Amino acid sequence: MVELIHHVRRILTPELCLATYRLRFPFVKGAALNGAAVGQMVFKPSPEYIQAFYDMIFRSAIIPLSRLPLNSLLSVDLTQLLPLPTAPDYPEQCLGLITILDQQRIVQTGYGQRYLRAFFDPVCEKLARQLTAQPAQFRPDGKAAWLSRGYSIDDWLIRTLWFWAPLVHSDVFMTADRQSLKDWLHAMRAETETHCGYADPFAPLEAADDVDITAFQRIEEAGPPVKSYANSSREATVADYTFWWIRILNSHFAITDMCGHYPYWIRWTGLEWTPRDKAFMEQTNNYRYDPEDEPVLQLVRKDYLEGVWRALGVNPEYERGS
Image (cartoon, rainbow, N blue to C red; front, side):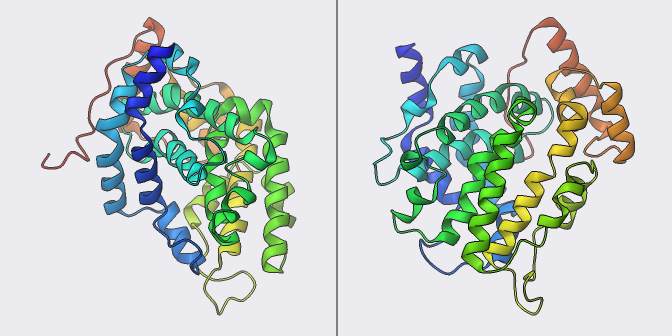
């Protein structure tokens, strides 16, 4: 085990975690933030960002980690790779590590989506559970961790959600621990309302979103706000953007409550659609299902049944000169 953690430490270095964090959040600490611009940048990353992210993490971290047995990687305490919670760059390193493991979803295609859903997502879920379960004064997703290091409340608001993204992406968490997410979302709403001085316009819609399996699709396709909910003549603030992401995270519940998992991802783990999954796909016009993926999905199913994994290779889409 000691040898394994040293091997993983050579892959997920502090330098890589910090570089990934800075690429993801290039904003000047404490500077004024435009909520509309932040929303577009973070939720709709540019081709240039996606390429830079791929170049930074895929060959150096994702492929080497994929060569390890999943059970071995799950046995590693990834928090041992991080500095002490009192270190100056502790929350940044935590968020960089989360970003490497969770946000590789934007550069994984084909068979790589099996690695994303069935290999890396469980690893990142474990890490996110550990980080968000720490005592309040040490939690890297907490307001104190960021404000005590010179960040503003707006800086914190645009970062904290990404500590919870791996948990939202987890079928297990969303079914077994859904109330934890609900409580956190309500706490974030209260924090944001206090900060901006106006109410979350989506709070009255929460009960309806909780049972509407099409809500997530609609909210995602509409994208983050461009104009402020409080004053439509002004650009969206970070608070407006926060209210939007609170709603989009909340809209996942209807899907996992209905199916017990995300139907549009479950086949990438090797499992087949259930009758409820098929009903969901029918009602959402086959959301996120591409018939052209079918040959790869059949390959994933075959490998799952045989208990094997094909080696993860580079993604030709992002290999320069390909």
